[in-house]
Length: 263
Figure (cartoon, rainbow, N blue to C red):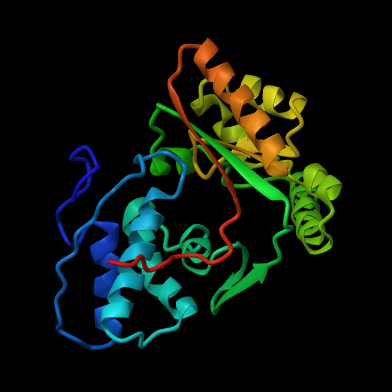
């Protein structure tokens, strides 16, 4: 393994990549082994889906070597087992979009039902990763175990409106709908200067700005690449003003998911 700073486990029962491939082999009732070489260019504990990236890459690569016995959606089941060792829960929030691409909605886990949502053509994402580590387990621990009915209704309405905004390519509706009343208030204090960065992004024209995954990365949505560049520069400026180093990523939404690169 390279690029992980020596932090990733070399234990096959603890690394998300090997755990996911092992789950695939158990399902196939196969005793075949794999040598996995992982080049990790994502920071750990970043809120960028680092563990999911390893799981997704591993199962897609193994599936390719085996002659593609599984379709992409089936691979999500195996990659979820990597998430179980990463944070204690076999969830598809990150591995499903990693493998399938685009924006997805997990409607159900029993059975697993993944709904691919449309992505407006001009929707861009800015992600700023401050050099602060927030472990997923810690970020999950601060979430409330229960929420009020009022909070639930507001959150569910925003989720439904966000989906409607995607289908209608209604950027104004998307902007009004990305309003988190559950995770953001609980996790904001784990991220230095979060509300200052959020305010700066919105004032610069971002459609929305909130916490990426479990943090500390912060994301913003924009309409168009030009606006994305302006918002990214402003978010970076705030972190720099507070002497916090950060990395900035700007991209349209990847609609294709995992790709097999030519050798």
